[in-house]
Length: 334
Ligand SMILES: NC(=O)c1ccc[n+]([C@@H]2O[C@H](COP(=O)([O-])OP(=O)(O)OC[C@H]3O[C@@H](n4cnc5c(N)ncnc54)[C@H](O)[C@@H]3O)[C@@H](O)[C@H]2O)c1
Image (cartoon, rainbow, N blue to C red; front, side):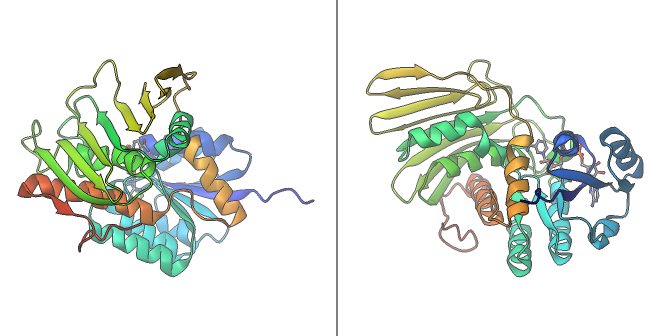
């Protein structure tokens, strides 16, 4: 049997999360970090030196033209996701795109259309789905009735790019998407309705929503309540926490979703805490999908649904009305 082919990969966006992927990709025997690119050339060059990439460039066109590259990791600001994803798909490059897919429905739809047109394998960076404790929780409770979840961070500086309405979208779009995605993943039925309250509580210079209490109703009647904001990490439950109940079973995920406690027929089991999970948890299944020509572990269609639910929550905050997710323009269906 011939040994598996080593994939040649590139990273676009040599910033903080690009570095998380670079750490894994530069050490992973299944891939060769062939190239790194950033509009800031010194940053790309520093990545090349630190992670032993083949070359560094500030010309992203060189990545698209490089016939040796099998897959590209796009780790840039959110308003660049759609144009870079479209260019990757047009060049026939499989791509991993950091979360959120994009922060407008129009951009999400551009990305989905580009992937469907080209047939490339594309994944979105919703790594929480692959945390061992989340996988165990999902297997434990197949039909949840009620979810209470949160992603509550410490204060983000107002001049942070993720708080820019165009580049980042603010905490609810940028980071709330992680927990909305996890909740949608844990509920097997389709989200059909959203109602939310919240607004901009502490970034007055930015036109963003930084705080939200979001209620999602699912097609099977289950409901989820999700709290999001950069207003101070709760010390006991932690930044990322989620509890779910259904029938005779319930569970709590805490310690940034690395610890799991399950309860069945009033018997509580505390499972061994997992170490904090890095980019490997999602990079590895994406690499396997590309190597084997299989379906993406996190489809762009599912990531579009996540952005749609967050945008619908923001729309609900603005209008004071519930939003029907099955109607246009949300068009959220499984
Ligand atoms: N999955 C997670 O837990 C997680 C955590 C943090 C950030 N992220 C995501 O990672 C992505 C990047 O965030 P970050 O914190 O690394 O940002 P960052 O600002 O640290 O890095 C972004 C880099 O992209 C470069 N860049 C911007 N536009 C470019 C373009 N058109 N072509 C080439 N390079 C370009 C910038 O120069 C910068 O070096 C975002 O989508 C963010 O939401 C994910």
